Amino acid sequence: MQTSYHSLLKSAPAPRLHEDTLPSELELQSLFFSGHFGRSFITTEGHPVHVRQFGEWNHGPGPDFLHCAIEHQGRLLTGPIELDTHPSDWEAHRHSHNPAFDSVILHLSLHPPRKTTFIRTSQHHHIPQVQLDLQQLANLQPAPLHQAPVTLGRCATPLKNLTPTQLEDLLKQAALHRARCKAQLFHRTAEAHSFGQALWQHLALALGYYQST
Image (cartoon, rainbow, N blue to C red):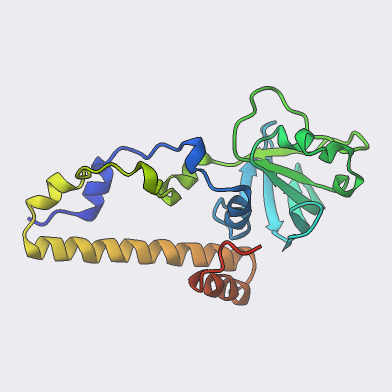
């Protein structure tokens, strides 16, 4: 009986995320813009919000994403979206005192707030907040090279008892799983933007431009 790749995945514990292995803010922006986190969220106040248009990724001063459109509490709102690693970064970066951020319609953050946080503009207008799901990043986190133990991994025990045919079948299933994940990511990007934009972004990724600003 051949060992299933998916049965090995089910037996493995869920990966834990650590502060030093989380993506940078720029990488988080890329993941959000590509649709990795989806487009429907629940705000910290419990209201559904749906991103209808991810807009344009801004690499200059000002909010991170421009010309966006969201549905929030039965209203269609248009304007920028800002993404920070921590909710407190809004105040730490003095966005609440910067008129360039007065038109922001949604604030995103990754970490849960250490205390109750109110996101407001320089005109004291309230901005809805969304906390992104950390667990959606779990499968994207490679272990830092300097922390890799010089021991056999947990896959060694189940793999050493497989026949060559079983190993070949396992590798094929792993390759198919990886291909499906990449196809799903491409589909999310195309759904969030367009097929042409998705093709352009993933071509850039394949050429190694994922860290480009």
